[in-house]
Image 1 (spheres, rainbow, N blue to C red):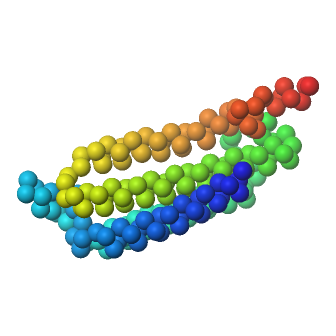
Image 2 (image 1 turned 90 degrees about the horizontal axis):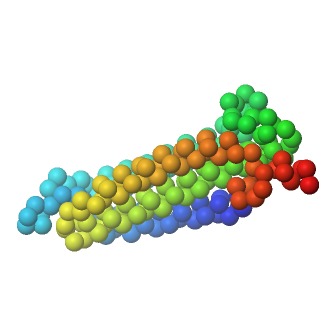
Image 3 (image 1 turned 90 degrees about the vertical axis):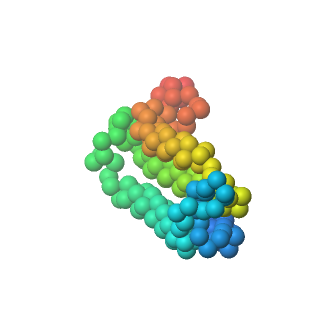
Length: 177
């Protein structure tokens, strides 16, 4: 499973690079999110800024989460204040699965953020192609902010469940069979 998630995360980086190059070459020299009643841009931004901001964001975000995963792998689990710590510390399989959950969570989060950044680039391209202001873009960014908060909180709730897999029976019931 983690190989599939890692592959999808790396594939999302390639998709981001392709989307970034396509949008960069397709955008006008001045990129705008606002247009007047005559469809003329207001308060433009050079397209190089869009390129550098998007690249910086994706690279920095992926690096931070990669370092986060490596940081957690180097910390002894006993030092972390994790819900149900006795369950996650009880044997080697539990400890390995704890780190597997963190790695899968971080990689899938990178995947979602990379693809969402591609979507925002596409929306920016569309807005400038048709030269029409789109008020839904800010709503979509707000929705992603809520998804972001939900994704962050998932990790904290996940460790409160005494199961290796969310869809199976609790491990305590399996050991009594």
